[in-house]
Length: 278
Image (cartoon, rainbow, N blue to C red; front, top):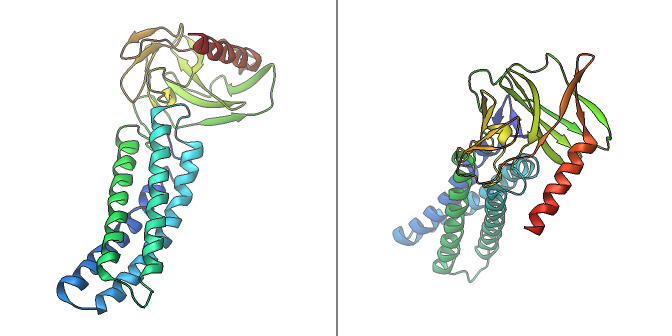
């Protein structure tokens, strides 16, 4: 799932988070050394590190919010984790904001200040743990490359009805996929050795993005837990998923790959109703 906030496919958020991590950890360290060594001058260093950490945190939050809204797959375990990650970071920023205000009081207690710092560092560690899981397990921001994968491509289709051209006939190579945002729904367009296919981007197991997985021999594999599905029938060919995926008819007309938007929306609505009834 390629990050929306990137520089030449390199995600910006992971680049920036190292700064608030270092600054806030340094804030705690220098406040601790000030007590252990009895050097009040270190409080001044901690003060400036506290300010730098808040500034760095706000800066890192911008690409993080972009990825939360546009990169993390909706209705997935990663979205729940990303929400907790964001809320934990917000709480951590509030705690260090309180620490910055408290350290300026004339009757400030260094020990209480250290406790506030410690709470902030614990929250920082928890948020970092979840962030690492989002990258290394859920592969958020990872630009997957495999033989024949081609470059990551996306197309947004809004307020459209009927048949819509979603690619040129030679726009994708065999085993290459393209993520379509169809009226707010995520659909994968793929080219197999037998022709073009389209299917729901969401893996039924944990909500992983199939567009971020791999495609070979008419089978798509989810990058999170390895579930495999036939892109032609949508049937499960390997677990852990126990449910298949929804497929959509596509055709080629006058050199253009055509997708019927009405059928896509109708099938997705029917699947949603079926899930609620089950």
